[in-house]
Image (cartoon, rainbow, N blue to C red):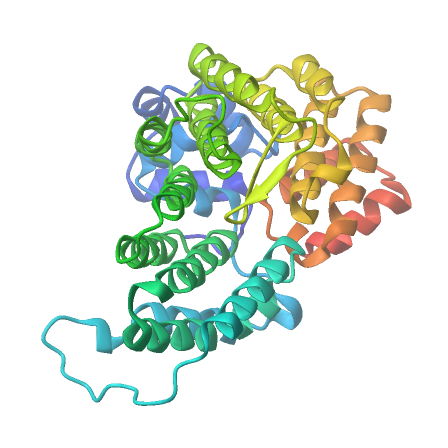
Length: 399
């Protein structure tokens, strides 16, 4: 494909490689020929996520390719990601390959869980390079401890793989993310924690969404939610957290597929489940509560092209209930809604929202396709972008 990395150039190159006209691509994808033409000519820098998904599926490429989610770790250091890849695809895990087992000393479970917590702290702080550097060793320790300690060590191994899946999504390696998610599910199945296994369905759903497989993403999350649905008002709060987060996970692909009525159903069920709490909870390294519901309401409304609804929902989001990159992601959704009408005030507020997201973690920010797309689109609208927007352009780096 072309060395250019704009969304339009990827669409144009992929379309021509397949011998398709714009009209034929429009017929295959259901996306209007006018939008395809505008994207290819770079008259438009963004579109709805559902349009990206339909175009990617019609072209046989990933959504990651269209959104240009290549690695942007600190100092362009991709060695950490490659090491995680090699760990996930270890030849020792291949059937029929008999390599000498690691006979080192297992890490005591408390120390191993502390290391996993450190990995999650890095992830939620947006320190992706630091997470990439520690994951191969963490997964190796967790494997060894699981082999020698048995099912008691299933949870830290599952969460180590879960962290790898999350990292791979952010760096655009969606297929490796699915490998990591499968490893996580297998590890969790060796333990006896039903909620740990259910939580991983949310991770799988997220990976499938980034692969453009919206129907599968929704089904996985919705089915897991149904399996653990709390049946009594006195259900353990951890169960409600996992259940509610799965409902919100199911809402995201429904929005991407433009099924607004299904989104309303998931959001409504989640809102009912969250009504028992004033503050959000954080269990199994996932979050749920009134703010999470409002945050996902903002996101899905923005994806569905309802900026007014998105901004109204965002008023209920409370900073103290969100982990750092969740706060950043919410501001990306706000920026998307604010910029939708193309007004001068909306653009100024969108830039301010993007700046908040960038301040959370510049490293995380430049891995977000929406951040790059919105920043460039806003810059296209203004011949003199000004310092705040210029800073954002510097943060996302060259195309």
